[in-house]
Image 1: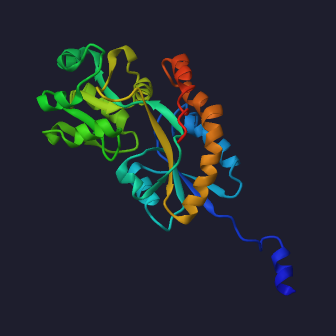
Image 2: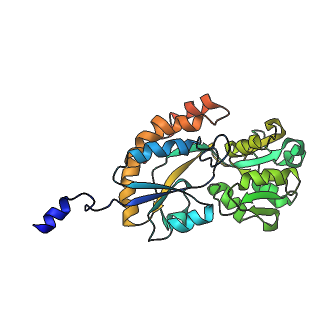
Image 3: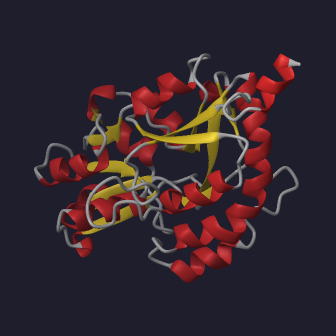
Length: 281
């Protein structure tokens, strides 16, 4: 009887698990500082998603890429990252959700004044042959250390004949820093998402007409990002709920949040009508 009475008293019920959400400074998905802090697409999604998961207490934690990866791979940590690309390597240690949102694929951002350096590697459709460019050893390219750019670009970077022409940069605002370094001719191109490069350029007062974005040959127009969670029993249980809720939120809310950052907003919204048509999605 004592045990039953204790179970009924406030504070004696089993505590809920705390799900740690790992957010990196990754504009325009997540924005940590400045006048637009908290206004990123994922920033706006998080309160709506967590409200639909009352089974858990939720903690937002700001991390860098290395720390986030370490925590996701720690079997004693219960965490999720809402901004991950799927890769075979990550899939071995991280549990991935259904596709959560589509972003314009990574490509190469250059200063328009240097277009002549790249002209011979651009096809009639405006796509850059990145493999041929790197093989020419004519330019240095800035990349974010530890980031996946999608299967096509990742493969090109792995097979680059001169890795010393790939300048790795780390840090919470790596793309912003690389834009500054590009202007100083430390390298002549960077690989990034165009919405991300545009955001940092505007924050730094760089006129957008001074930059040019080159899509990469063989890379689809969009690539899908996922929510990645700890590959544990707790992670699997949470992922069932996340997938259930994201089937609704990704179309009713997140598409609109992300479209606000698109140069061609109406085109993105039109394309979004078919993003999740496949049965496996």
